[in-house]
Length: 502
Image (cartoon, rainbow, N blue to C red; front, side):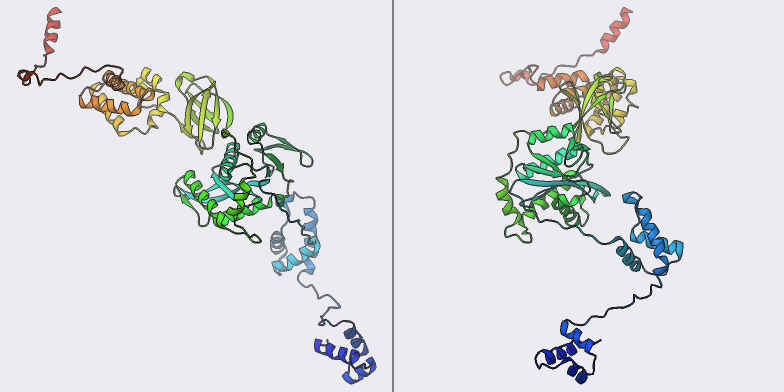
């Protein structure tokens, strides 16, 4: 094969010195065919094989690979052979001695390579936002666990919002939107979403969807429009897809160590605000500067926020609790056997009868857990004080130190179940009145060494000004009475009298 320098010499002799091809061949000792190729092409010569190299390794297994690829044509899309799986099967089943890259080159030649081409897009300020769910690991209360995070990105300014949740249920879906709108200080005109079940009930042809009724109500409250992407085409939501990867690599590395979702979300919100300083490639303004312009174009927030919860009809059982999401939540005993409505928020559960909320609990995230409020069972415990020791609402209650002391005093003063009954009746005052005033009344009763339900109630009434207190007598004008002491009556005489009457 001639060199590029030889080509150059031939071309100069022919084009500049006007030598003939015969003379150049004679002087340079090469064939006229070689000279003609040099004259027609000045590019560096390239080596081309006339005969393909022998395929000693891949050749014998080509029919086997072809059979695997033919099987894939009728196999489920997500259960087809990858190159690595083909290579592993060749090694395990056919003692293949070649490398994985050799198999990869052949599979690529058979399947062909086709990469989709995309159109660059540009959005008007305030017009569009994209949203989706992502997941990442955190260390919460010393335990490594996976959390879901809601991601939304304004397409014009590229301003991001991230909020973490324990699940991706509809109440979290609504709550994520609400927080994002409040963070952006407005609502984008169009929201682009994947076809999530929390919003889409059924996918029809084209872009037509049957939407969830609750999602339509939520959208109606904030007045935005929705555009759902084509199934299997995540690039249509490319900005938020890139955001999810960016957040996972930058916000969750290293793994955040937090005590609660509130702490985690505070950290995520701080990092979202810090993104305002970034100037993206090809942009002259920072994210924060562009958002200032975009904020004016967003839809205004409604006067009241949407109640981000889902509604579930439930029925209280004979044990005065309702079952929801495989957990148990207590209600006041007077509502046992009633049909009720449970409102599930991300962090709490409210239970209502008609229009009145009768019970509220922190939402349980596990399975088979219980949230039993002792105050819901007080009327029944007062009626059945013998069940006090083994009652699960009592055992699950973290008794404050003051009330532990009250129970101890009352059990010593009143043997049997009476002490427990007095204690439960005092607790009932706590449920119905001002907790701070009740504790003040209890401390006063203990100080007087007269702790009982009646004493505490009387002191509490006095503190609430329901009983007019008699002012103390001023003895200054009567100095002779200052040293006077009244003897305590001896009530044992009444016992003597009652004995005589018998």
